[in-house]
Amino acid sequence: MQKINKTIMHVWISAISLGAFVFSWVVLAHTPKPTVLVMPEPQVIQASVPDQPGLEPIPSLNNYIKPGSSQVQTPKRSTTVVQPRLRTRGS
Amino acid sequence: MEFDEFTAMNTLIQSAAEGEPTRLQAGFEGVRQFFADSERRFSRFRQDSELSRLNRAAGSWFQASPELFEVVQEVLDLHRLTGGLFDPSILNALQRAGYDRSMDEIKALSAIPVVEPEKWVRPQFGKTQLAAKRSAICLPKGVQIDLGGIAKGWTAAKAAALLSYYSPACTVNAGGDMVCVGLPQGQSAWQISLEDPRDEQQVLAVLKISPGALATTSITRRRWMQGSQPRHHVIDPRRGQPVESNWLSISVYAPTATQAEAFAKALLMLSEAEILAFMKPFHQLRFLAVDSTGKLWGTPQSKEIIDVPEYIQ
Image 1 (cartoon, chains in turn purple, cyan):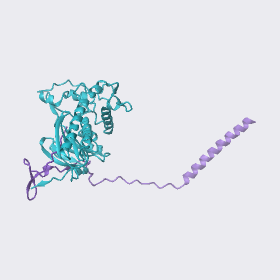
Image 2 (tube, rainbow over the protein chains, first blue to last red):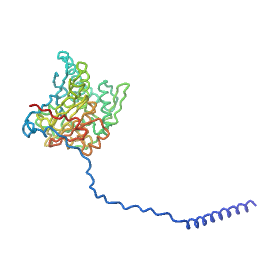
Image 3 (cartoon, rainbow over the protein chains, first blue to last red):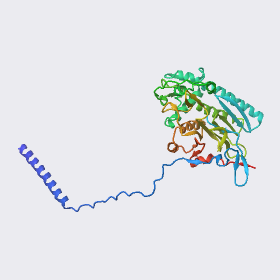
Image 4 (spheres, rainbow over the protein chains, first blue to last red):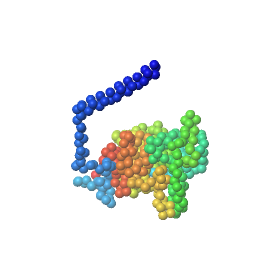
């Protein structure tokens, strides 16, 4: 008796599962399809890509001193640079 | 402003301070004494120095003085902070490159013998252990350290602190490692000449420095020939060879002398783009790089430490 009940249960569960699967298939096949999202084509960037950042030039006394002299170039007068006595140099 | 100059730690030491001259003499004397003590402690050329004893004890625990312990602790922190670019465990490489005696002795020699090339195995300085409670250091076996520049910077900082007992505005400069305390009367900054690494008679720029530290490292000053190879004292710890640098010198302004020294050394090993990336997290630091043509390079922040030249008629 117990064996018969077990067999009936198996058949019942299998039938229900199969029915559910077929039903779902049919339902899904008839539902409206989702809108396909169209990804835009990657655009070619026309603007020039900036170079990798680098260090900036820093104005030195050479910007003011004539080569080979200690004279300073200023618009109207020639003068000398006051150089502090304290110095930093490579160790 | 009163000045004092002397030679210690194989370099020129300059002290300057404002105040009453006779009182300052005691301060200057204290600075001289402190440098003499530091030289005895940190010299790698003296077999009896504490540093030499520490190197000989590599692989086991060494009972260090508070001074040596403090320097090694700072060095270890800076080694980690610079991603290993600052590395004092290049002593063997430095000796192989010919810097195995003082610079005065090297200059007196006509030629430094060439050493057979050897595969560079980078010492593991980062694995150094410290025991703060008992002031003990354990260098990994085989690791030999040189505290040259960093010990000068540390000594300059301590000496400047000592001098500040005698003067509200003073500075100590140990061969490029400079520490400024207070400000000269009526001034908003210390004015310091940045020497041209190609010609020590020339000045590239006048820097304006707030209280803090300025260090300059150059590959043009401590140079020698080993066979036909030109050599200098800044070793790239990644290669175990003198740095092949884009720069002749790097100057760094930082809150402390050891930071300034370590970062100046580290930046010397980097290219332009690498410097920018490397310096990004370190907002407090300012740097100036001098290229082989004597041009100065930096960031917009670097201009903050450049003084507009003063002119006299």
